[in-house]
Image (cartoon, rainbow, N blue to C red):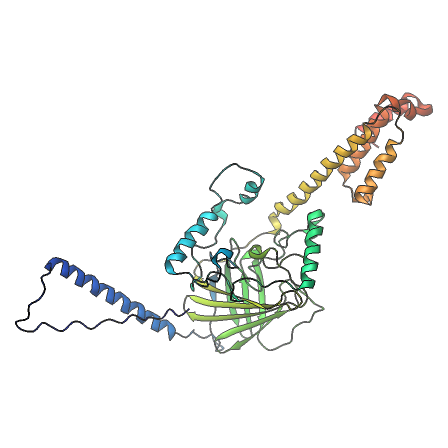
Length: 439
């Protein structure tokens, strides 16, 4: 959007001629108005001069002559990845609309506010309190209504029919078995990849900071989120190839004037989104290609643009644009794996739910009418039907089933004589021993 200065100071009115009658005015009010007009004119001229200076600004150079992008930067922004549907075709906010939107987004993101009854969804929303979040306090400098700038509707394009079919099948399977193992979970939950690391580098709810370091022939981008570093060669070497896929892909860079262009191929992928919390329903495959552009138009700004191309997943390419702001803060280590109690909690909680369901069904099968035969076969059949293979059961599940079997044979009167055999009471004692957890 063109935000150049269009204000022009008007020339002062000519002085009154001798004998000319002037309109009656309040001398004090006129003086105040004149002073305010002078201040406004001076401010406008200052803004215009600063804008003109920025327009002519050129980035400093590194010792090897490249534009200097070094320093610590943040892309924290309240601008959503995709344009909210209620905004329709509105591409830019006015200044007043941007202020109102920022206020709304800050209130919506305040998880410390308690509204209505506390429940399961409310608990998930408050897994972290507001002290942990750092989404920023403003929209992007251009006041766009979305980070997606192409297509013009500000939305990620539709999936191809083949990709949609694959995506739907994966989601359906995940709904049936959401946590059989860590491989089923989001890449963010597994501390493998966040959208902030990229490419493309997309804002997350916190840790939206980067450190850029340049050396002869290389640019390194360290993302605070998950402390991922991309070392980007600039010497024209080829990509590693599809036989060496990596979660962050394989990046190669070059300079086009004052713009750093980075092309990344050879991405590792699975059914989960690689685009972070801003697009958890996203998808990619082996044909993903991301082209990033870093341009420094002002001392405190890097304009970041990234185009995502994946012709077997998306019906057209899509581009994001984000303004990154210079900051003086240090980068901190984000220790994700070392304290990832969330993932172990998800998996162990799911196992606990499964055990509770199995206990309920097993109890129904061992509490059978007198004279019913074959309870052990019923239980083993239940195992086979439910799990396919008994070796998928956790140790606690095996103990559960052994205890239920022992209860059936050792305690229920109709089965006690059947279990004793030649050993008489010995069979009952063995049954009680097994019920207590022995073999």
